[in-house]
Length: 238
Image (cartoon, rainbow, N blue to C red; front, side, top):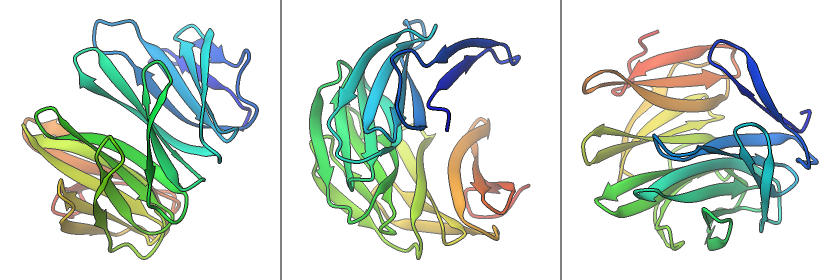
């Protein structure tokens, strides 16, 4: 709400505040650009309809604009070694794909309400897909050029967040979290695999982590004041 983002050490030491020549409305999302061993850059998105690029020490480096509404979500992906793309979703009902230099190269049009979540996954070697979730209660899979290749239906409330993970090499799983108090698991081509039922209020965040080699867990956060850990088959583990 204070229109800034902050950089911290893992031990809690504040390194930098991203504020100079900064956003004029609250910061909604943050992402990191740069592969292991490369110089990192930070990206922030805001209700002021802009993306900003920063050094890790808080120096404002560039501002990117093209959306007509507040930017609600932000992600990056490495299309090829060292070549990054930026993804945004907006209250203007669109998502956009940007070059690392900040040029808008595609607009994803098809949702009928705000885009609330965005992620990417590699459907096959060199073949990337964009995954979006929307307040229109659907999620969609797109090509980076903006063609919708699948619409995922099943939620009865706004899709608040999405995530993707490669559960075995070359095989991706998609996740959605919604205000209908559930999260759902989908195949990479948009086929429903399961529903995670147990929260008592809107599910606002979802992600996955590899607990041990080949053994993944799904993590959800909810407005019921809890976070839950699940197996991919939908069983609550914590």
